[in-house]
Image 1 (cartoon, rainbow, N blue to C red):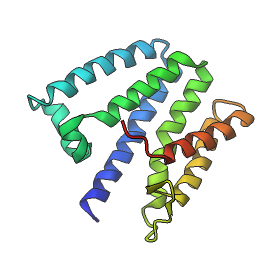
Image 2 (tube, rainbow, N blue to C red; image 1 turned 90 degrees about the vertical axis):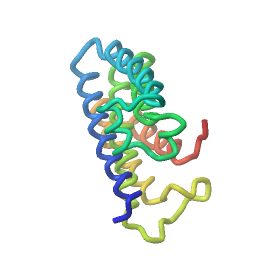
Image 3 (cartoon, rainbow, N blue to C red; image 1 turned 60 degrees about the vertical axis):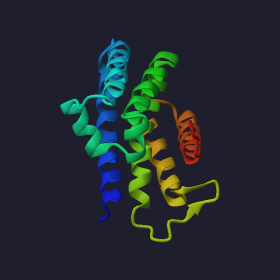
Length: 173
């Protein structure tokens, strides 16, 4: 298996693990937003500090899970965005909608990647050559299923479709 594929698989599994932890905290711990806020602040500081010093635990995660292009420009970018997105939905939306959003983020994107690994043709989308049509269809189904644990059916279908279609576009910051 290619080195890049192994990295992406490790990242996908870590993505699910972090998401499940955040989802569990958000479901059962009333002060999750404060905890995520403090973790986000500390993570931003460690990300900046990692430009100058190799911090043992942080360096392990950067070496084993971070994309090369992020290591030099924005270490920990994906983790920081995951935390910030989770914090944002917890703060802005009702509890059940926030949980559904975090569940969609946790499962649909990595499963989309797993669904498209074996497709040699890769059936690239016209608006994003990095994404696969099958992966997006499967991720929409997964998004609907995981959202169904938290919100009524009419909302979960819309949330699943829109979130995974939005994920399919390339947004450069």
